[in-house]
Figure 1 (cartoon, rainbow, N blue to C red):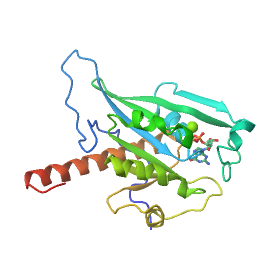
Figure 2 (figure 1 turned 45 degrees about the vertical axis):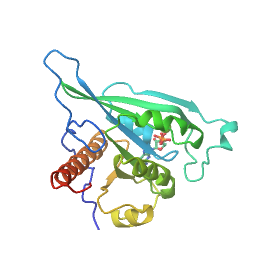
Figure 3 (figure 1 turned 120 degrees about the vertical axis):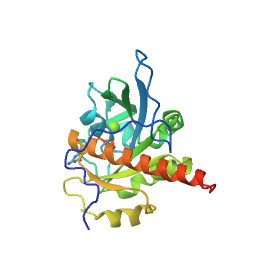
Figure 4 (figure 1 turned 135 degrees about the vertical axis):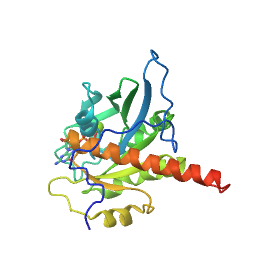
Length: 224
Ligand SMILES: Nc1nc2c(ncn2[C@@H]2O[C@H](COP(=O)(O)OP(=O)(O)O)[C@@H](O)[C@H]2O)c(=O)[nH]1
Ligand SMILES: [Mg+2]
């Protein structure tokens, strides 16, 4: 089965959003600084987070890459990502100006377990997240999926198909990762800006959809 939200084609720029589950931000008053919108890019070690943020960011991304050392070898399992020579020691940061009133900030979360204490801080005020799934190590995205599900933060799964990695269909990924039917699964090449932007647009569409469902539930008195 084909990916419904295929990200290979250029997609429209993401629309602004405001808080988890509420995907529209109030427009700032004229002359006020632009509203800042925060999106997280998560996934396992080597899934392509730094590459993704670097590809879509309009500024030179702030990245805290360090050469992988022998000391880290015991902590960061390189099975499946043997060609990786650097690792992000804290986070990646990038920016996309949507229009003169809205700026999107992208935060790549650190993939290694020892940096997980940063995740709580990073997810404060986040609108949603893109979880990158590496087809060579699909299970590595479980913790990120679990983290966002538990906190009710809207996310999509972007399948980063590495050379030589198995090509999974979206339903296979959904089943393997245990995703609900509402979570979009898209294909993504983290190296391409058009592909990354497409994944962000898919996330914003999903957040808008969640927001609409949540509003109609509250109007009808149902619990969302
Ligand atoms: N073939 C391929 N390589 C990728 C892709 N995304 C990232 N890479 C490469 O995979 C390696 C690890 O990516 P990186 O962004 O550092 O992963 P991170 O640990 O999640 O930040 C780098 O050498 C990237 O150039 C992709 O979509 N396809
Ligand atoms: Mg990184």
